[in-house]
Image (cartoon, rainbow, N blue to C red; front, side, top):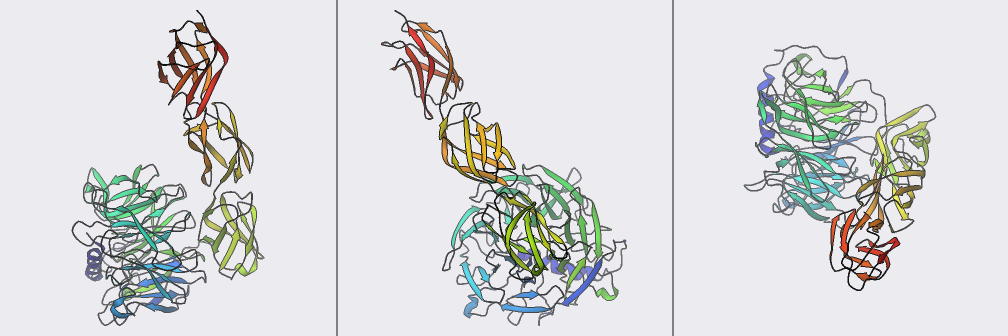
Length: 640
């Protein structure tokens, strides 16, 4: 199933349910729904508002997005919308010969750390297979990649997202022909386009088909779903590293009574404040009308809610977003009181509340069939669009549920000294910015955009902007990433102490040496002392994990073997000696008084057996491993 076909189905379904308006009834929570702008229809009676359509808030406080196939050449456009509903078209696609700038940007836009907007077109470009583009808020477009419909796929649906750590862009392309199941691609920005591309994952149907855009988790991995494919062909949930090491978490099985877990996951999954990932399927569940699910970072799947059509909506096609209150928000294409769609809230435990039923006003004056993902602006309101049909009903709207203005971070993690970008309002009157109570140096660039440098001693947690008249908190925690600068020693034995010097150690929760958890003491924000644990492996980096994430030492740490005793204490040549201690794995040599033993065996990491060799003399027993050489503190006496 490809997105183009799914979208066509969506439009036909919207037309068919229009006639059913007013057939069902259910009460909804009192909210303020405001129709702000009417999407105009083109000569084909089409507005171009459809599936995907991610919107983003720019540095200027305006909302940016795309329209898939509007305008005179039906090639689509990019727009700017003020929070009050003033529309400006900033770019019309297929403006260049042979649509070299791309055509049909259905996926919407994402905001880069450079303040520019990034998106994709499904068609056009120099190879007629779609593009990735960079667009300034003023409307200057640069094509940064042309898909070839080969190894990197083509017809990308979603815009790329910029990686929190490395600054590269990651995205997905979709199924185009038999044997092509979509790809997970990476673009490394270059001074002069095209960007440098690689493809960490080419999906093979077993591991998914038609991937939705994954989200980057706080652990640095990407969590996503595929619309179809997997063991049942009904889609799946997966995790992947940036380099493409993929783990399948869950294969969907449909809507059978015993396995009503959902079918055809759609939209971008979102990480909750509990570290789990939440999403929707647009079919399946107990009524085959879609589900809400969550999956833990270890892969544990939980079905939270099965839509029933009435009163809770049907066919949740837009995915979920995380609200500033910690709940999730989304829309259903159908269902609700008029079967023309609804806007809903769902708690992390799965309790669904209908916030607004579309087509609640006479003649559906408020629109119907909401299909694009919601966007929560930093003013606290939610924004979205209804797709309507050829009879109308396609509007840009806001929904005010009473949430307070907040601060949104463009980059929600970084190290001491990094610059963090903040979006919001009222920044002109800023008097201070703090990271979980630790003040940073800020620059209020405009009333809606502010930068702040992560200060020494900053703590992972809420970023708070204080103004002359109050304060605003971030909608999620900022992750202060630790940094290891140096180690007091590059080697040591089990039990020996290592002093680790760096930054942002106050919230340390774990130290790992040689792949094993080590006992530690936080001496200060810049120093931690840890003891080498038993069974630690040699040649690995020491890692520190804090509330903000992990950090690794610049170099590796060698675990030197430690001999704690041996038995017997003396004996002639040929005597079998049992040597006890730590870190014996990988032993390459044992000596008695400097003479190598020709017969020995590593029993385990704590025991080695050896025969006293010919020519041995009284002296220490020494064991050599890749980690170094360790000798006994007492001598083995060779008797004659």
